[in-house]
Length: 117
Length: 117
DNA sequence: TTAACATATGAACATCTGTTCATATGTTAT
DNA sequence: ATAACATATGAACAGATGTTCATATGTTAA
Image 1 (cartoon, rainbow over the protein chains, first blue to last red):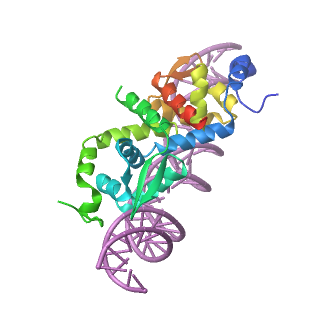
Image 2 (image 1 turned 90 degrees about the vertical axis):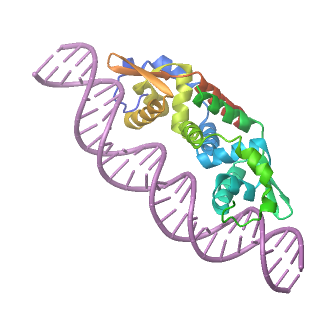
Image 3 (image 1 turned 180 degrees about the vertical axis):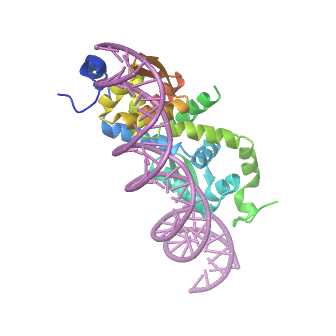
């Protein structure tokens, strides 16, 4: 019934624990959720997102705004694309990136509210 | 005026870029924000948070619920504590952890809404 | 077609992250 | 004080992450 944990059954509050366990998400959902939040866990990607909240932009504009190489920006855009945070359309020589989903800005804003107290 | 970027001023849409630049946050704020989101970027920490949304818990209960070693849980709790996501109080032999701020659940829920479409 | 521009991508690299293991600290009951 | 329990912490390690560099792909204009 119990595993090799050190603390005693009496100490662990078993009914409390069982009740909480029933309300947990599935493993896969925690994983999905962490992958989503990882996208917000890097300053470069946050900057890119905050730019795209204002306006759709090409790689070149983003690189200029962030003072970064095109390559570094393109790699991050690729990550954001793969995680369906942003989408893109080709316009002539340029590839224009924009937000894929309104949820994204809500998550960003929820975090921003927190750090601004 | 411009740096060693490859693309031409005409291509970069300079007034568009300047307008957007004025609305950016400071470097430090992007960093703070990314540090905050990093806390949500790991399944173990998400699980711990989702437990604490329901109820304050001691390390032992959390380890039991997550089938993890006390040490691994304690390390993550330490990270969450240092980033002021959770707080703790000692109750006899136990240390009981709980949420530090209502914002935390809002951020989590915003993410959860997104992955649930 | 060729040259020039815009973006993408693979490999390499240094750094960061999360867990484990061993050990230390702190609390309570005896 | 001592033993047993609960938690914390440092070092070490494997795996993930972000940037750079070199190169490839794709588009447009000449």
